[in-house]
Length: 400
Image (cartoon, rainbow, N blue to C red):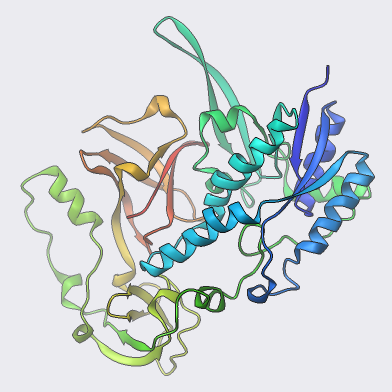
């Protein structure tokens, strides 16, 4: 009897080719389009109109001769993703809705719907791979699922799946993980799929490109505040490291955020809400006349102040470490979980597309410190850090 796979057809080329490949491999394939958003007032309509996407998904299903239906998950999406985004921005953090969308919507709500339709697996058009191995513990064989980077280094999307669990991976297929993007487009073109030349969607998972200030203004009112420029000669940057009385004290020091007061620089402009900005941001400040562009180096939503520095090498952008609280640590490879006082050499990234950087994980009683070999730019609270051994993603956590 054929194994049944439900494919999340998004109306893009990647999921279209995923569905085609699965059908060719002999699976019983069903296409499902997720409708996650009703409010078009805050989206740039020609970037990701869901009606056009659902129509394209339906045409692909017709071409492939597979059943197709649309599921409305907008209520769950609002509760689990949109409300979460508002909460995070209000606290001055920068959330990553795409990572949450995969954990909470695609591989939870959507997966449960798929399994209720008799599916053995769920498949998506992500550029990543899985493999399995057997682990013998207490005399019992246990299957381990490995989440691996995609073959195309320019499209690897393993970072977006960094919160998946062993159970979720056991029911998931990534048919295009071994392909390059160019190969995916070639297959779509050869099969006459309407999505072959379609541009990749940008912006929020299943919403599209959002005008972020307008989006946030639904809940977070604009409020004028000062833009302060902090000089590169700021005294805190010049301080020598203290002598540490313990390893944890050293980890705390290396992971500590730079702190500022409004008197540590000069006011160079006015913004309309500190919670609309994020570390490392350059656009949207509307401040001219500086020798080098201004970058956001810190935001203070309590005092409604944005601190900036000139140039991408400004010392306020950089630090060596970060911290993940106990309840925000997630291990894809639960069998490799660190115990208190254990360390692990890894490579890690703090944002999608960032090159992997050498780092050391340090497990303490309060959480996980990640100390990089080289200082990292714009470590941002609310974003996810993901750590790897070679091509395998081992775990992730929310940056505190």
